[in-house]
Length: 140
Length: 206
Image 1 (spheres, rainbow over the protein chains, first blue to last red):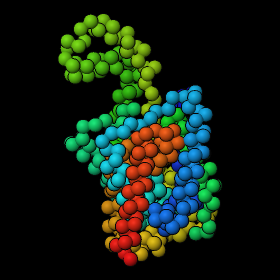
Image 2: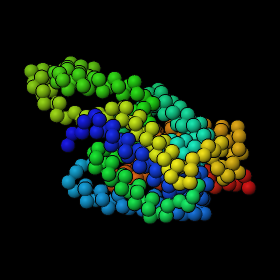
Image 3: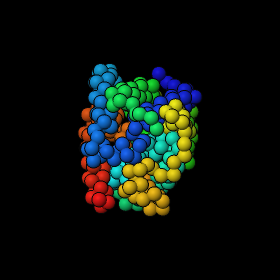
Image 4: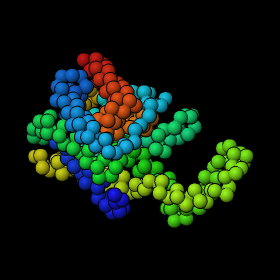
């Protein structure tokens, strides 16, 4: 099954559109709701996430019998990177997808978050090349 | 904003997107990977052009591999393989995995914002907000101080997800659903870190 370039663009676009609609409709782009999840005052979004993982796990368990799916590896950046990401998520209420959805919804300061994300992504590559010696998994 | 969807509707939606994306594109869903490609789009385009050239002219791949082998291990490593190299590289085009063009990743990111826009119109009308909501205002103030927090937080999100090799979608959804150890570890750590930092923010304000 080889998709043409146009089909790939359409599939990526459709996924982004639906993902944006679902994330905002369920409240994942609302800082207040996300903060309530992280302080355990309302577990609704935690159920959304856990439920999604459980459903996808059931589907992948069936699919993985026929297909080999690429797997990420643990490397020295896994833990420190995740700690940084968690701190950023707690402060902005945004993961890399959600900052964009927030901006689309009309949250103008999310543009600053997006600016930060772009800066962080650019900065990481420079830092990785200068100091880190592990494979970031980009070649898989 | 009107009422949010019940948790199970969101779970079905996100679960279905994760699986459908893999089914359509045979790649795990991952937004931080798209960010990486879009931010470094020049490099992505250069790689795509190089791969296209190699696919058209498989001997180029053989030459490149040979040059890399000599650079890494010295010429002695290639003795006895010279005669076979072009033959091997003729088959190598089948091992190339078609690269996703960086423009598709850009479309993906733009579509995410468009999805938010559509959802705002559907759920009770679109409006501009100058802050991230009452809770964020309570924690970080409304104006300049909250913008500084967003910039630093955004930097941590961008840097951290690249360093960890994935974010909520790549590690959290795609990875955890397949019980990949790196993803389970990353997800536990970034959730734990977000919980700890959120309690710290609360403690500093109240």
